[in-house]
Image (tube, rainbow, N blue to C red; front, side, top):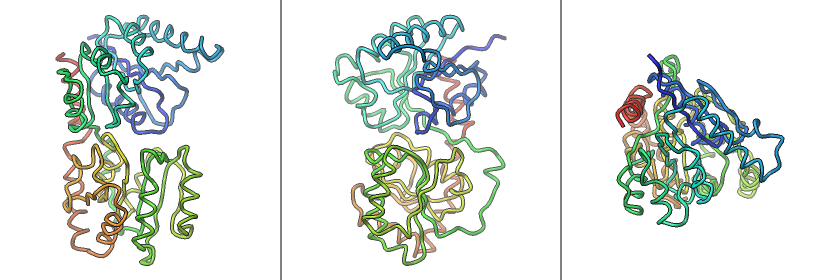
Amino acid sequence: MNKKKVAIVSHSLGIGGAERFAALLTFILEDSGFEVHSIIVNNAVDYSYTGSLFNLETESSNSFSFYKKIKKGVLLRRYLTQNNIEIVIDSRSRNILLRELITKLIYRNLKIYYIVHSYNFQIYFPSSKFFSKLLYKNVKALICVSKAIEEKVKRQYALKNVITIYNPFYLLEEELKKETLEKKKVILFFGRFEEKVKNFTLMLEAFSQSKIYEKGYLLHLMGTGNDIVFIQQKIKDLNLNDFVVVLPFKQNPFDEVRAAKFTILTSNFEGFPLSIIESLALGTPVIAVDCNSGPREIIQNEFNGLLVENHNPKAFAEAMNRFADNDELYHFCRMNTVESVKHLSLKNISEQWKNLLTHQ
């Protein structure tokens, strides 16, 4: 039987939540019986993937800047045609109207699905509401990674072809079976070092106000990104050099997550953060701000973690101390972590993707 051919188009498979999901989606679709092709616009591959990879950046590397963009479009259309691609899942940011209208022409006669990864719509929608509706109204589906994003799309654009499929966690059986008998006095953040999104100012100020380091706790920041210098300066300004450790990006930081007392998230906005799901799947509770969107659809306050009012360093500091001091609360939350995200397993989410792509 001939497999249906699917192309996942993304900026890259480099560091970042949307990019990580694009890599994960290759496994989801291959397990569901599709022939998978990844097409990346920029030359960055940090995450494992399966199937074929077509790198538009390297294929057009000898071209001048403006001509390179045109060449990428020509190469994309040629690749889709020559490989008899039937379905396109577009995971890129899509806020430049002219580029997206041209991309619609490149995708013509194919089944198109677009993903919205963030509550910050400036990334995924052109500024014109009229043209945003025009861009999305006739595609097979606009897939949102959280219910909050789906509701916002329907509210702002009155589109009907909108659904939610949550991001899954992808952990091998041996990872899930490992146990950490003793947690370290470590608070862990893992993700991209991007102040505008992740709000390290709030994170570091809350850590400073909590004085939790006086109880022997360290804050570990694991990742990479453009704002590393800003973060290091903030650590210095708050006199936290002895208590905050910056660690390099790691594709699978499972041992560090499992060993941490809890993980934290202080973002201004999100989509459906994989870091929270993976932390809970590995048995580590999470303290997160109640930002738009994601955390409130994953964390049940005082059940599998703590959900804190956003932009409130004092409240976040208090939450950290609650997990440090209140053993009963902490162990109750820890006991509920794994079960609370079972519905987000790769098997369950794969089934939703398979149903969407085969029955539409």
